[in-house]
Length: 449
Image (cartoon, rainbow, N blue to C red; front, side, top):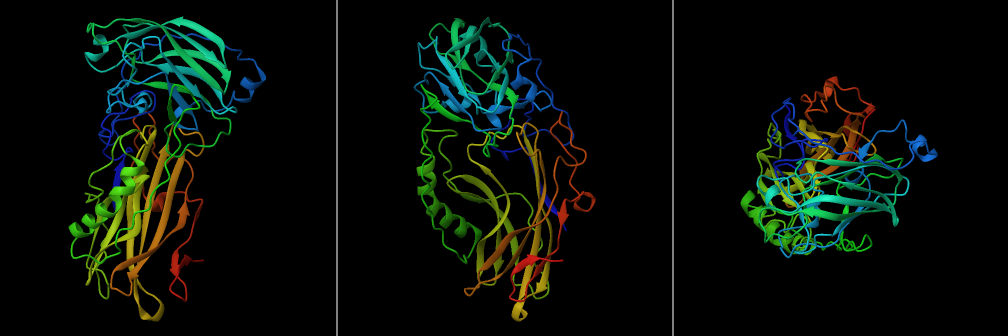
């Protein structure tokens, strides 16, 4: 028995990501090729491609640095609107945009990449690339790009061209500043803000560690002005059991609202989370009933914590419903999701006899992740096992996860052009290692021979 959820992360939060380069629509049908917009590109160059640093990276893979390694992006200002965030500059969506302060038409965008990286290309849209908003707003006509205070180039851009326009350079990582020197006014004369849908910085990671949430730190006015991460408050939902899933979710939302609101009060991307922090989702749950099973039913719910959105398993016993530690998928709230595709499934579930004759449910999940703009591991499939039984109160409890198998690299049939891959068949994968999950003499979950 196997049920699955296929996601172009994040699950349903973003409808459209950039089709080029490397980001795809959440709603793309399986095996359907993406349809990238025609992107006019203006190329300006600087740097010495024959330098020793350039030679080191000649055989490396060029990636989107801002969404792959630890970077900082700063903007000169932001518009006085609580629904506009600087993060819209790098969220992978053309239908959102960074809006500068009214009148700040010669503002700037700065970015910092790790010193070990190599920056080869800066790509940006010259305006708000969304319908009539493109022509109604000011568009960038000329820029200056510098590194550590030294001018690399000054170039004209085409203010009438939608899509990305490129500045090609070849520089070591560090602090860069892109200053706007001229703009072309839009048709709405009262609109006097700099507006940019997207910024991308391409180059080589050269061993820089991967950024797990795939979004750079954002700051106002200075690259050193990024606000520190807030210390997460602890929420304590009741363990259960509950009479219904609705009662369980109501208690969870009540217990977690304060710490989640403290982490995301609305002043940073993607804004406030919620207000509902627990709800059933359509992902099919494993079959957990059978002779001697302590469980009557199973359901998957989406729950928020102060850092992530998660899909977790709820199990029903004779005493009621309880939220378990079994996790089907999770994502950071501020992860834009582009450059990432995944499939998550319940592989199987079986009843076994544990210590002292107790019946235990052992279930396995499969998680396949693909990062085609990633700086380090391009992805792979991981098999995890859990062991579930009843606690003293009669509520479900689960031990795990225990990693029982792993592959490395992209799954068979992966198509980078469409961001799709065929349904993963565990029996056809080439595993780096794979062990069975067994119960030890004390009933503990462990790897078998």
